[in-house]
Image (tube, each protein chain N blue to C red):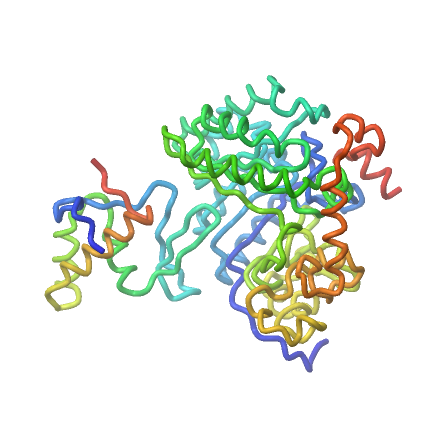
Length: 94
Length: 381
């Protein structure tokens, strides 16, 4: 479910206390946090690694569409960001 | 050699716990450290720990816990953290806060420490003064302020037992005043010193239920957000915990003397020769050692676990608890009500449910044994 309070100009960042990194042993991006670890699937990893706090959701979508030579990712990216914000993996800095 | 082993090949030891030292300024009666810690050999030196970090990381270990004893008792903690950070570990420091000066927290932050879990434990022997112990409160408050100042989330862990579980409301209010973001109310697990003191520490069912209810009401209060986890003591459950998600599947503990263990309590398990990092590589320990392979898969299981449809979910529970209560680590964890030994749990709970004299009188009746080097030597002369 998409969060209507998140706009495409929002610049999501990894939540404090979390760290995203590539783990060769797991062949995946993982999100590390106190006493836990989330193994991300390929598309989640591609979105999360672009959530630097500097790029807007629109920028991230455009970059993904360029990188994977596709279009129409906007809704998927927005839905993932909303889910990740709800789970507190990402925050939207004011 | 174990050429006929049919153990499933495990994934990497994703979670690494380094118990850097058994030295500790506190003497908690509910500590899970082994009661014979004074008999263990000398601590690993800095270079040994760094080699352990490198080898484990090369296998894929990524979550790192630094614990003890009190890890701040090691003056090379900053050096160990710096190397762990360079290698890409996510580093959790599990500390009482005793010894966490501003100089050290600044150095740890610069070294790349990711997270601090502050345990709230009483350092005095007057257990009943637990909450009014001004000295402890001031120390913890000071450390809590430092943790916030250095931009760490404030994570407080409080071990619950019979003598403090009725004060959950006050504990939560105190956590709130300290600005905690997460509070873990962890009921005592009965290993090591806690096992030795179990009869005095096990709360009654009524106490547990009241504490849960208090926690639930506190969660609903107005005010600043604070995430509260209430870990139910497994003695009050009917199914065992999936301990370590199965021994040898994810977790690797290295004890202060270099002993490699599939869980931090496993040193007690009889008949297993656990390897030492002084003489074995982490790779050989994790994949090839007999003691790590022993409890992988389900070939070791007895009935009722072996034919149980739930064995893939709880792995028969905790091997250490099975051993402590039944004398055989391959038995079902007696927490499970399918275990023929389940009465050992229900009897302990029944004893705890009986009206008992005030804690002070009980302490005189059978003294609590505090976790001190002297007591360790007295228990294991």
